[in-house]
Length: 255
Image 1 (cartoon, rainbow, N blue to C red):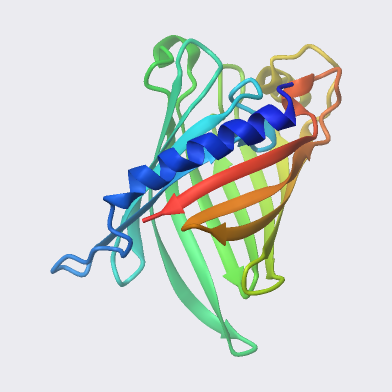
Image 2 (cartoon, rainbow, N blue to C red):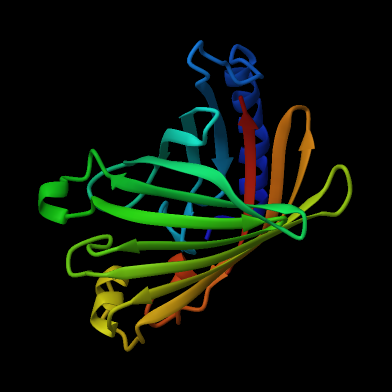
């Protein structure tokens, strides 16, 4: 694993890149005559973790999001990141959906987010490796809590079939400057063979695993800065350093 000090130094250096890239970007969402507006962000992270597992061989990732949404809650978005597996070096995710208030609970809005997302790996020879897949997702949010569920019948990679991902996210403002963020995820496969195929491991495993993260976020110089811990409960025999617990650092800028 790369040293924490090296990651901090590299992230600090690249923070200037994020700031410079956003200087010419509008700091306010731009509204079109049809009430559509754009938003996005640029992010540098010490390790790209997908459901607790490193996608960059424990290396850094540069990521970006661009979204288009309207006042009624409809949206389309694209997200991209460098990766470090397979034969490619890029992940491109496309998703569309709608988020709206469905009710009020204890005087607070209860919102529902429904959509479809396609994971794409343009440089990964997908016709042979089969990395591309489509996932349906839903998120129910109330106050500081969000309950999510994602479903697919053809999960990531050859040999993996149906899959469900149940999540619980919570955030709490500790002060005007500090925000605590907690994420818990349950990864459910149809059997141990599917989980083995997903991990690329022949070790004895069950048919599910859990991932988590706990981050402390603040804002400085127009940047969102976060640091914390993340990991999974996957055994070292089934997945070595790519699934273990680690320190996670993140720098982002919204526009």
